[in-house]
Length: 293
Image (cartoon, rainbow, N blue to C red; front, side, top):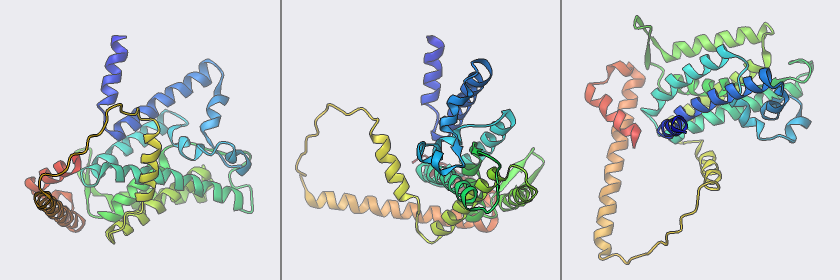
């Protein structure tokens, strides 16, 4: 019991993407046990995305749940490592909920691309009764978002050399295109391109001042609120002592928020032009604190 309580405490203290990575690991172990030990692999089939529309209609939740299943140890390790690095970078610069929007919308768009090609392609593109699993579409969305929004931001590989994310994205896209055209795991690579498209469009629209994930965010919040325990406390409303004082306070708060956003935009513009390493220590600290708000 003490071990379980300790694990529960550690899980609750993870951020959103830490929990997503932990859930992926737990689901992978459960899938492994059900398939290898108990010979009940068909149970997880209800959470995999089928290529057949008639099957998908009776398990529509699979458009998201397939992103929590993986086919092997290397599959999950690679996806989770890349998700970890991309989510850390993005959360330091953007709202956590917005980064979650990109990830889950990438999974959904990847699944839709898979279904579209599987049912409209004139030949048997994926083989008989294909299924889709893996978080790759969501990871691909984050990769293209970072590469398109901050093309010159860099990552240091093996403590030896730095590489720009835009170049990493080019390598991934080229590799996926080659493997897909060669006929390797075509369904999986089609879903990657669905994620790439979402990440690119999200970045371009955000640069224009439009967050295309707001609607999805409201829907996700409404769904999450269904499972939150309702408070028994009553809300007591008091009349403001001074309306003018309240208005002045609100104006001051709005002004601070606007100034802060201008600072963030200026730093992001600097990253886009010169890379993350061009920031001063003070600017990096400011972004780190802003990412936690």
